Image (cartoon, rainbow, N blue to C red; front, side):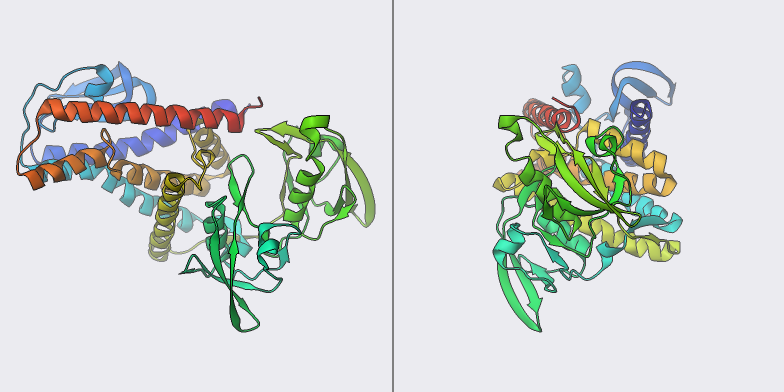
Length: 444
């Protein structure tokens, strides 16, 4: 059973990141001599802890969060969650309160840099093609890329006017923009060619599918236990020659052929799909009946990638970590932008079920994978808390900036109303993300 280890990994990862986040607020508040009433890992009922110098250090019943109660900072998430009123006046100057609020997200950003650098120092395995030049070696038949006129041996050099140099950049930019028309600049026989690709949503995460592929052969790399492919007799290392009688020459063409063959399954019911595979010099035909999961018919296998180990001294790892965090930050803001414009999908956001699954998988893989995941989550936590949404650190920072412009502090009642509005918004957002989380991970 992987569920218990996933839950334990989730609690460990979130507790670790939130401890440092709240620790940032705590240390700066103490440095400015603000009284700190509570330092809590988790919300809700106090389970255990200790008191020292006026601060209650506690572990609370709900482990998915935490808070520091700083006297004189104004109302915060703990007041809203408990339905209490912040009766105390404000302490210190606005710039001191600004720095206390900024400290939490800032610590997460620094932690993301260090954790990712630690993962790179230990060594992480990644698909070799991701850091290679994005030279197209296969264009899926009928795909958005083929419809746009992309050809084999074209090199992608820019997306939406921004230069790209690796397959990872191409896959990230196109994958985050399903349903959006993306201007693509290609290098073909020494001259630039401009086309427009409109990725199609695919997989349970609505990842944008374009049909542009590196040199990924149609070889089964990993079979998911208990899924139709494994049950029917497919094996890792099988070279897929055709699906439903239609030849395939690249891995992603397999995905498309399965989707085409299953086009009428919702109306007529599922039926076997013939997979012709080459195994040990023999050609076999194996019938596989996909199963429906999260709105799509699935066989249950992944491609075989040539993997490479990325390991480097810590100094160089810090530099690479910085660049990686910049790339992830850009991807995060692109995702938010696509959601606002309507071209993105809520399925691309991960809730507690997804994070638990990813945390468990990383923990089982090894310390480097776990550090890399924690670095990514720390970055996301820091960026999320900088958004100007009431109740988050960024929302309270925004209020302080407005107060600075107005040259007066807003009343506690006004701040409480803003925080209550932010609380309602965040609860609705969390419920929505959790609902999609359930749909993506539970057979309905």
